Amino acid sequence: MAETALLEIGVEDLPPSFVCEALQQLKEEGKELFASAYLDYERIDTFGSSQRLVCQVAGLSPHQRPRFDKEMGPPQIMVFDEAGRLTFQGKAYLKAKGVKKEDLGIEKLEKGSYVYIKRKKISQPTEKLLLSLFLELIKSIHFPKSMRWGREDFS
Image (tube, rainbow, N blue to C red; front, side, top):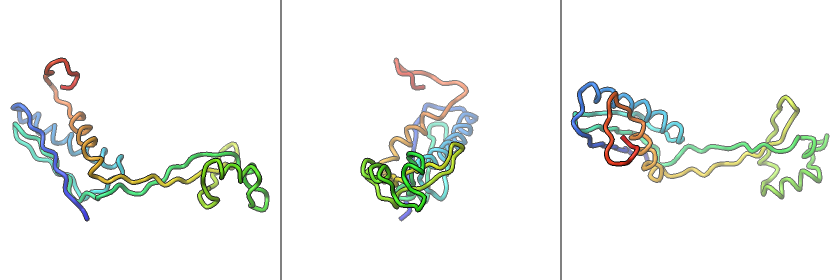
């Protein structure tokens, strides 16, 4: 079921030109952040006033898209014989990595054919990712002129 996430940022009075620029940054950076986190969504809308910046992500999927990692392994000739059967080293490699023959793939590189392991990454619930994504989104906003408060390096 698609959900909606809302980020509302309270700010000191901003000039209108700063508001427009910040809203554009929120939208563009939001697209990049959600794509890099493998989260699907329908649209990102931004709204604002001199004291509020709002980013609304509509149609947000409840989990990340499934994805796979490729872990490169040894040369193909060490894992498989000419008939395509596992060699002794191949069996030891599977046992050491805790995978099955079906989890292996072969990739041709300049140096020859190499075996790789296809590992499915566990997809996280969107709810767990939103806090860090929204924090990154807030940090990504840059103004032509900004103020620093206290000893923090956050402006």
